[in-house]
Length: 154
Image (cartoon, rainbow, N blue to C red):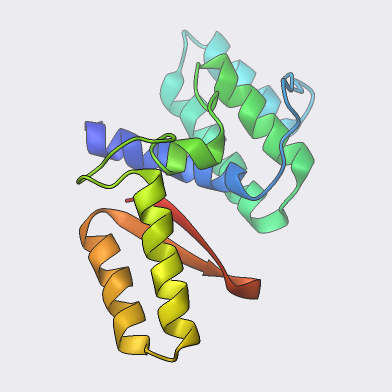
């Protein structure tokens, strides 16, 4: 697996946890179907590809059901492998204060606020330009209901 593929996969797992609260310090439920398959894979000479497949299946279930119990199971099983130990928002934003293409979190937030103001003034061309500039800098914006805009590094 290439590093870019690994980063994309980890981003997918953290994205599943982003909006669904997982229990802090959750322990794996080895009786739950995903837990059973994960444990079997790890007991099969550390069959990591199968264990990772279980994590991705569980992430899909979390995205479909928005279940906090499944999110906790995902975080706990990922933790067994040393994964998913960071706050999902911090991971997806590259960490507080982390710079990518010269933009830190405060600068991204300032541009999001400028975009919000442009939209309020019905200057949609400027708002779209700000979104495009951020995307070119590796920042993906996600508009949510209620006028909330979340962001993550691409």
